[in-house]
Length: 166
Length: 145
Image 1 (cartoon, helix red, strand yellow):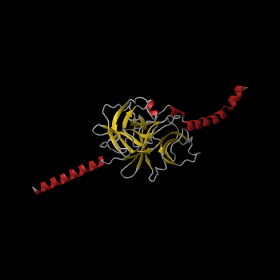
Image 2: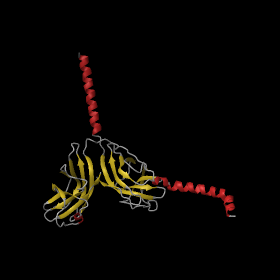
Image 3: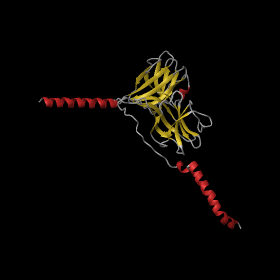
């Protein structure tokens, strides 16, 4: 009896089932889970004569309110430098600019106990305004991927910028 | 003799003009206005979004190192929010948005023109948005470069 019911209703099942399946396919496009659509458009302008940004990030205040952007540029000559823009921090004694490791637990603190594994870039030139710091060619930017505004005297982290590839 | 001299002068002038034009083209770099990185866990989205301003004032959004999951009817939009959560529904939430076009590819570098007159102070975040299911795949909050 069962088989004959299916035979009789077969066409109704197909007539209902096929459009439902098509509608489900159209809505979810499940094949897209496995199919990628890759593109590679060039930049809409040529500016190879200018320094190229390599890494960038925004500064977050820790012990003192700090804001602005930190960007590492590569000059056409091949030399690299850190540039701070829209920069603002509080003034203080013996404040330095460092590159530190982004995964360093010390960067979560306001006051560092002990030493930060870091590369020294120099004394902070000004607590406000745009400024540049030269990098040594040996600096491993894949590892030292955080900029720290650091008061050496009190081991205080004024601000941190975690850098991402531009 | 005079004719040769004149022709030489014209050529020199042409060469100078050409040299000047190529120098102009090289300096014709666009200005970086804003940038940010994508986050999105449900539909794993990553990469950078940067808005450039060309010399003529035109704004262009460029996605680099970009990756998201492929899906149906996925678009690039600017939204009037500081940031957006995974699967946020901008239709239900009544979020203002500016359409930049259908996503060209779910992987790779790509550019989108931003309509003239778009207020970047209002539209602060880029979203990869599935129009069919009204779901945010990934968002990149932008900050001044």
